[in-house]
Image (cartoon, rainbow, N blue to C red; front, side, top):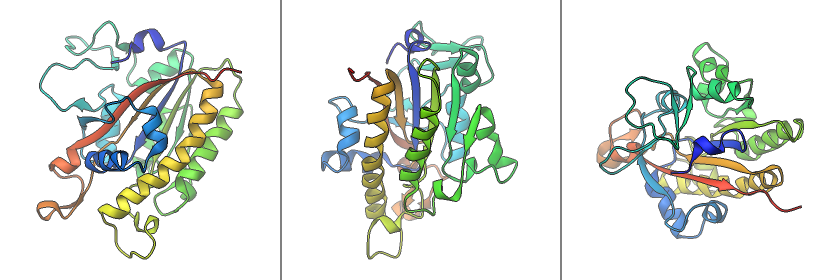
Length: 269
């Protein structure tokens, strides 16, 4: 685990959720060389297999913003990267960044960070009271249909917007940038030409598309850096395994998610 306690305040923070990405697909596409951008960021061992704290977007993100990121998928008492001040916490260690706040977004804001949300799936669309809960935590939040699940260029549009918002801020302004990548979520069939239904193959093709767009984001972040980065899925989804389809169910393909944390170093001038 990175020493987040020593990094908060000196590093900008990037938190990307690859909405609905399955661990097995992330691992498979990494091994096949189809996610070169992510491969260049991940440690040599690749993705860390973890258990999500929720089996659909809203539940998982409420847990994330309470400081409960995906837990390593092995027995033990696992320390947390971020936490909120809470009596009796057994997973808070000296390396944990602890905030005396109701959520980590408020915690970062209290430390002088500008909190920016680039929304993706419907729980970030601000079209209803429920869709306003998560984006309402941030200093600024953005959503449009061009960022959502029905636009085949959603990740391109999300990256463009994120870069535009960063360019508008002074270099000395610390940033907590959150991006909920929507492309991998259903419908994803349009990433696999000739198909009319979502499948594991189109799920994988969507991940390859996302990887291609993330390269532009990381390149610009390096020029602003350094960054503490967390990239993970919020949950997986089923494509017929044991008769199940979708998520919000208790199945391994939903609970197992890919996770990575790393430092994105500043690029020399």
